[in-house]
Image (cartoon, rainbow, N blue to C red; front, side, top):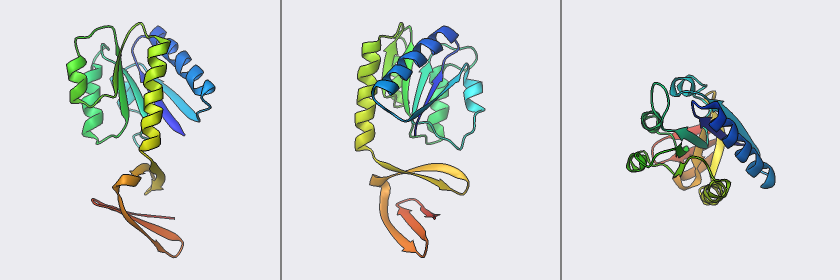
Length: 168
C-alpha cells in the first residue's frame, strides 16, 4: 500500500490537496492510504514505525515550518519523497538541501500535481523495494541495497551492505 501524508495548517488547502490526490488515486487504480496533519508537532507524534512513501509539506505553518520538519524527517534517514506546497518561491533553494522531490506553488494546479505524481509513480517503479515487518516495525529494503539473501528453514536472512534482517 502506498502511504501519503499531507501536513498543512490550512484546512482548506489540506482538503483541496486531498480531493486532488483521491481523484488521482482512483483514476490510476492505486492502493493508497492518506493521512492529514495540521502541524509539524502532530506529524512528529504519529506512529514512527510506518514510514510514508510520500509527504506533502506546507512551508508556512505555525510552530515548526515545513523546511525544519523536512530536516527532521531526513535526520531519521527517511526515504520518503517530500513535495513542498507553498505560496512562495522563497524557500526553493532550501528544498534542495532536504532532497525534496518537487516544489509546488499554491494555489495548486491539478495538472502540475498530476505531472509530479506521474513522475513519483515512474520513480517508484524503478526503485523497487521489499516491504517487511522486522522486529515489530514496518521497514523497506530497496532491492538495489540487497547484497544477498539466504534461506534458513522457514526464514530468510536478507543482507545489505550495512545490516542483516531475519524474517519469516
